[in-house]
Image (tube, rainbow, N blue to C red):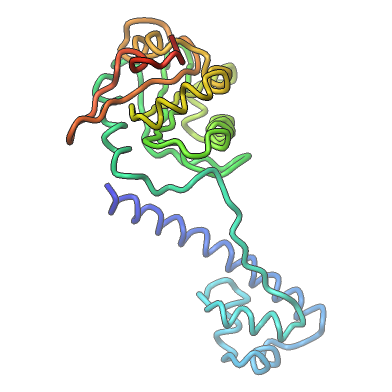
Amino acid sequence: MVTHRRSRLRIEAARRAEGIGRSAGESFRQAREDAGLPQRRVADVAGLSHSHYAEVEAGTAQPSLEALLAISLALGGELSVRFHPGTGPRIRDRHQAAMVEAVLRGLDARWSHFVEVPVYRPVGGVIDLVLAERSTNQLVAAEFQSQVRRLEQQIRWARVKADSLPSTAIGALAGSDGAVDRLLVLRSTRENRSIADQFEQTLASAYPARTREVVAALRGEGRWPGSGVVWVLREGNRAHLMDGPPRGVRLGR
């Protein structure tokens, strides 16, 4: 699974790099022409071959960061490379794959499922699992957390990624009136149970459905009740979806 994810990320990274290269090349061309300079002159000052600089402007080269900086300085401009945080890393811990498998094992056939779904508008990110119930045009964006660290951030990320789902091909399955609800899947650990107890009202406002009703709907035993929290118990190499909240947890009862 890890190798497959890396391969897919490299493909996406290459696609985005091509777009950035084309955009930079076009900016260089416009700046050069505005200054009335020939390509060869810019290439000489930047310390590049004429052919390589021509490829950079055309967006067909893969210039180094040093080359891009040299061109920018030669044209009297500045090059900025910034990291803009998105909605969480795509790197998963060792428990999450087992948690996803536990949910999928008990999933009723009325649900179509899609793993690792990228969203782009209005925010970029990846939804761990998307469930689609065609008979009701219902979409569910599921996030899996084996350890909750920044609760408010996780709730916000889950919401904005779910709001971005209609812009994808999968989002179109729900139609114009389809709803997108959220499912938070938590690993039953002492730390997560403590967070659920400490921040019960915060979680309940974001995930108001009863846990048993959510689990029943996933198993085909009832209607989908809306956004909710379910729990997965990890035992050794196996994990299973719990019927309701863990003992002592009031959230979702």
